[in-house]
Length: 264
Image (cartoon, rainbow, N blue to C red):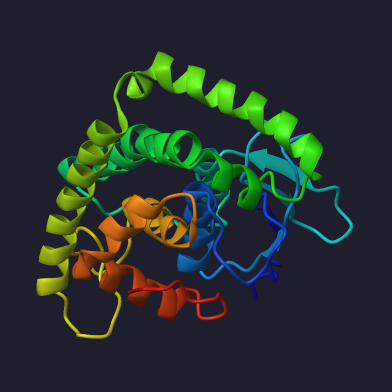
């Protein structure tokens, strides 16, 4: 008889103090989706950027045996990669063809390397005060929050300008962001059309199982639907029924314990 292999103890640090609800970071929800799609249990804590190995959330603490000193891992992609290599998570893209892998990588890049910066512009430049006072800085006392918020704004503003996004105005950024979601809607409309059931989860590339792109895409949809600092993005997402249906089915199947976003 094979020896019993205990499931590791995993804590996901999300940067927000509340539980049983999505947070504003798409990368946090991406990681949580990666764990839930595999049926791996975990608990959540707020954590802090000061404690994060790379100075960002999400990060995790993992103990493979009782009483073991936890190992801290950071970056949603590297966390998933390492847990997959250690056999804790399955390789979601193992059965993809080389061309399918390219498509999967391209969609993730569109979201993480393009849309992410458009979102940051909307959140931190167009809706700064909402981001400062209701976002990740909210737990900080007001006067300190004002000071820290200014430094964060300056850092993000400088970073966006250097990256290129900050060289456009709000109307142009809105148009770029709209184009991204229109293309995502095309993919999800086709996947929804070919879905085997009207109530079961369907995946972005129409397969029977999720790929890495699904973890990222769901993370971006769910986080935006709860982020008060992204009103234009919320309106855009809610204007596409296939996008909402995709996220709602995943929520009902894998996140039934979480507060449901306002879908309409």
